[in-house]
Length: 93
Image (cartoon, rainbow, N blue to C red; front, side):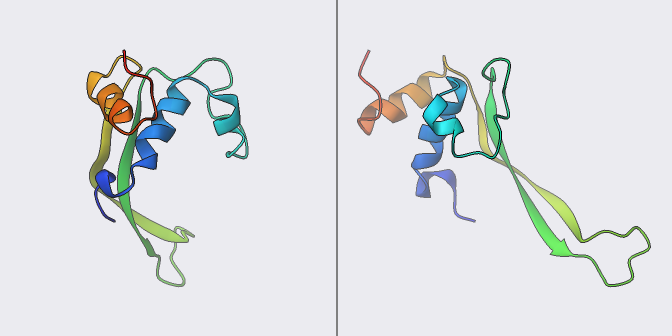
């Protein structure tokens, strides 16, 4: 998977999740944050491989953590805010 900069919408999605944006949450089967918005959002990258047939643990797949794909961001993250402002997704402060 390419780095997050190849998917600029991801940071915009993170911003919307941090604000519990109702329209954005409609994209999900259910609200992952029903009581209040998250304080931080990050993305972790995993590699998935199908498990071998007859696996005694009855697993469908095995996963291996590759690492943090998008570091944690908060509503006060100046880098996130600047990124969104530069793209016209957020009004300049």
